[in-house]
Length: 315
Image 1: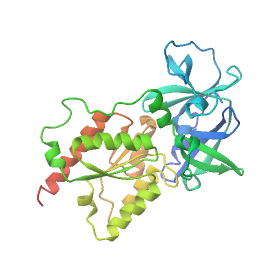
Image 2: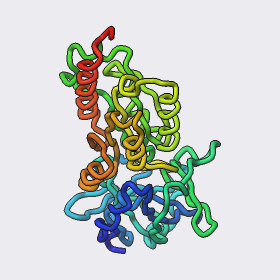
Image 3: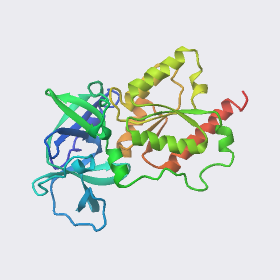
Image 4: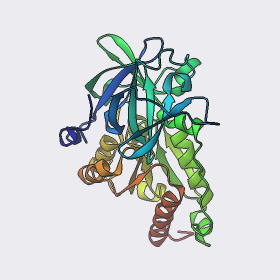
């Protein structure tokens, strides 16, 4: 399993079909967890690590791969489970999230499985490590828990959501007053990041936690006879979401005459090389990598100006 991305062309065919591939693995107590294969660069046997002084308690060291230095995170410890007891006979999963590369130390790697997003459900409400899950599913009658890696990384290396000085246009808050953005993300961290950035521009945010919930809400509003292009300046959607991913969500928007003219931005921690082709296939208007508040702010401001050309203040 030296490289899990050798069949990228085959995997991109899943786009728009509401399907994904997940890599399943185990942590200290043997439960089965998973992350999306698209975010994985490589799986390795545990290499020799270099220790880092004053690092986060969950960072067990750094390794070198593909010409870069990569922090190695004890994933079990990061989600509130016991640290891995055997750090020699284990694996690391090298993955790219939010334009950074890191490795997650796991007890063992199981296998890759192709699934429907309809079979992946939001986690049940409650205490415990559900706080670190974005979804759950069943494989061979066993529960598989999909980890909210964005939350893990945010706690280890917090992301700045402040918009840089000079990025906001002088008149933008006047133009944005009273306008609304529709944001969709299954990660509490991802949704909070979008909200914090968009609200600095002066917009309000209507949100949903997955594509199915988002589509139902948009259709409900449209059923009331609302002009959807006037109702929302734009839609910002994550790619990976339980029940309905961002690609299928966008496809469904384009297939509904009442929603088809909404401006849709795919905002995801998946790598940009894959998403450029995906965006064209499903009809997104733009693609932005997580998380760059300045680029998100620029894209939103552009849409506010386009909106105000169609619907001037007071119209």
